[in-house]
Structures are given as C-alpha cells and as structure tokens.
Amino acid sequence: MQSQEVAPERSRRGVFWVVAILLVALVAGLIGVRVTGLLPQLTNPFAEQETDRSQPPLLQSIQDLSRYVAAEGNFQVVVDTQRNREHVPDFLLNERTLFVAAGSVEAYVDFSTISEDAIVVSEDGKSATITLPAPQLGETNLDQERSYVFSEEKGLLNRVGDMFGQDPNKQQAVYILSEERIEAAARESELPQRAQENTTKMLEGLLRSLGYEKVTVTYTAP
Image (cartoon, rainbow, N blue to C red; front, side, top):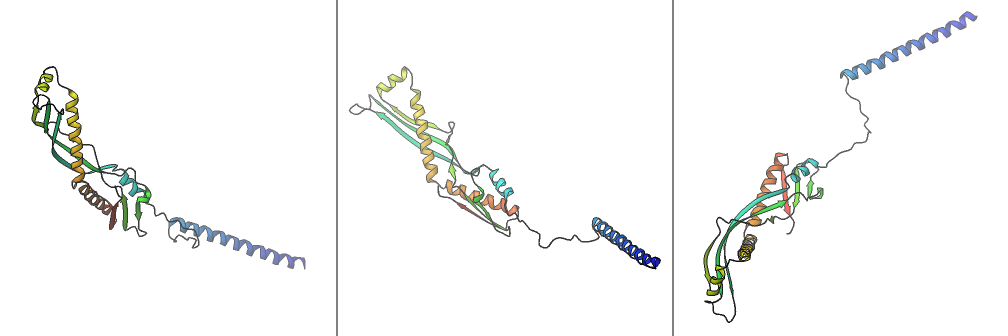
C-alpha cells in the first residue's frame, strides 16, 4: 500500500518539473525572438502618450536674424539756414547758407525681442502665423563726400569775424539739421512699407524651406 501512494506523488512531481522546464524554454524563446526582431514589439494600448507641438527651432531661427535690415533709402535735401539780427542791415550782419545734404537711412525689423506667443503653428504643422514689430528707421548716415555748401552769404561783420577764426559749432549745427531733415524725408517716404514687404517675402521663403505650406506675417502698430 505504501509503494502505491509514493508512485502517484512522484508522478505528479515529474509532471510539474516537465511543465516548468517547458515554460522556461518558452519564455526564453520569446525573449530571443523579440531581441532578434523576429517578433513585433508589443506595446501597452493604454499607455500615456505625450505630444510636443512647440516649435523652438523655428523661434530660434527667426531670433538668430536679430536686427534684419530690410531696406535702405538714399536721400538728398537742401538745408537753408540764416542767422541775422533784427534792425541790423544784412550787408553788415547776416549769414545765410544753402547746404546740400546727402545721406542714407536703413529700415530694419527687430527679431530679438519676439516671444513664443508671436509664432503660432497649426496642429498639422503646415501653416504658421508670425506677428512682428513694425519696421524701424535707423540713424541717418550723412555722406560728407556727397554733401556740400551750394551757396553762402555773409555780412561785412561776419566776414571780419571769419578772419579771426570760424566757429566750428555752426558747421555742426548744419550737420545736425541735415540729419533731421533726411530722417523726416525717410519717414514720409515708402521706406517703412518697402521694409515690411521685403521682410514678409524673406520670412515666407524661409518658412517654406522648413516645410510650411502657408505663411502669414502681420505687424503691430508702430
């Protein structure tokens, strides 16, 4: 009777070990197939997914442009200045100068200050809208080689005074007034509008080269 009870027990243990060995072999085989790439990667269908739609490369590309000079205008103005004294005849005390001033003014767009809010990219990544500050005018560059005194009238006392030395502040005042007149002419010209058009064309070409199909550029009020 004792030998009959031991035999089934040994049989169950043998079956257990056989099953365990088979399971270990099966797991090892699956791992090997997965490592070699013969079995597709199994993923969790309920795993959390995160999508990043921000466009830092686009923002950095535009900011790298910094101060983009979009247009330059060349201007020539005539400055007519006169200094005399009331109740004193002009032949005694008078100084009138006609100065032809030539210079250039640059129109630029400052990209360095734009933020991420200024760039809006569609969810499909095919279109982008950019809001930029209005073009600004740079400092006037007076071309002294092309600027000259056209005519000059001086009274007798003024000529006598020049014999003892000219006043350098008078020439400086003419230059400053010339720069102001050129700047005013640039503001009244089409230079800001031309700078805006050139900036828009440049950005449209840049963004289309990055894969954007539709590009919209707007400008804030100056």
